[in-house]
Length: 124
Image (cartoon, rainbow, N blue to C red; front, side, top):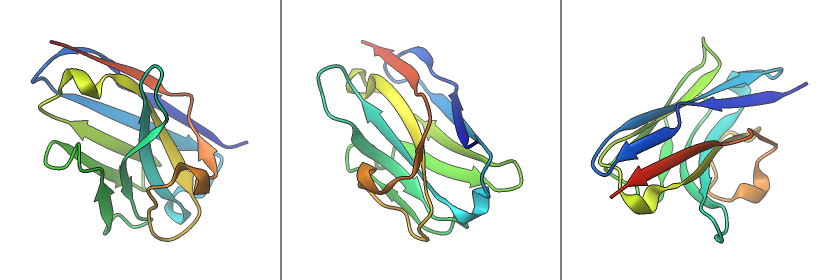
């Protein structure tokens, strides 16, 4: 059974930092591109960042470029999202997702597996 388990969310002041982790179980992690998405109350789920199977290719939403960094450790079956210079508008539930294709995608519809999400709240 495939499981993606996010951790690292919490409450932080604007300008602060958080690192999210997503541990994968029950799949061959290195065979999946990984993505992070977020969903704020009353809004649709939106793309945040994605990384290719080997980690050589990444993609970011314009709203987080220069502030967030996605990385992965295939030996630990884990993908990370380092978030710096956080803003109140970054407040959302953050989800990681796995896509069996080679290159990362910005579309949530192509992802095969999803985690349960972790709450990030940025206070002003």
